[in-house]
Image: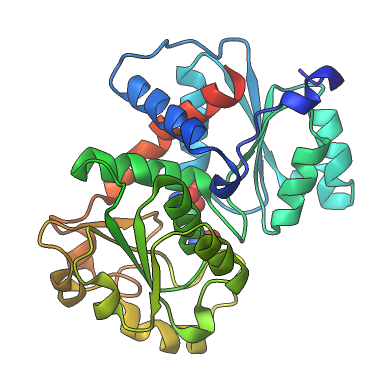
Length: 306
Ligand code: CP
Ligand code: NVA
């Protein structure tokens, strides 16, 4: 647990763009091993994960709780409003205190700076379970899912259609590490932050940006979208109007490769970002994607703590 001596060697899982590809691959392989029954089952016996939620969650909460239990460990779920951080205790102090009790801390929050503050003051691994900037746990499950269905993602074309949100940015991070082509179709007003594009371009990834969904998905091996209103966004007619042409429907899927798959991190809003026909159609792998949160995160947990 929280010992200063470990502070320099802590294996945080903060963002895909700052992790090494070999480590990311190791986590996915570990997760696949657990899924396929080859892994050591109780490798986290005696370990406790604290999970802090400042935003709602279904998949993340349940998959981390079940994953820790399957590995022999325990979880403590902490809701922001029930903690002293809800009354002004700093994240830094919370990090130092929790590090004396638990073996890892997971956080879902709004500002990426809070994740940074937690990690820089914790003496145990910190896992990013979503910020307004990124959602790396989800992307690990997404890579696993793509590869289970279509083989290695390297060199393949992924098309993002919709809001340039935290999931879109995380796909960009993944393109840098897993070496696939990314084609983004977002309205200009909702495009992903320029700083993220600059970093990805500097890293040499094959990236195209367009406002035409049909152009983005042409020949794609996978079409991905997400909600039009992320947690923390103000819902409003203007977002809806801007995103209306970006709904993933059968016509859009028809422009992708004939064996393209459809992915969505969920929760989905049928009739908004995706039609029921596509979400429930034969190209959709969204339920496998949701299941793989469990397996991929077991890989992340063992990499952080094992
Ligand atoms: N995809 C995802 O992170 O879902 P939850 O918000 O339900 O955790
Ligand atoms: N972009 C969504 C992802 C939810 C898992 C959000 O941040 O609300």
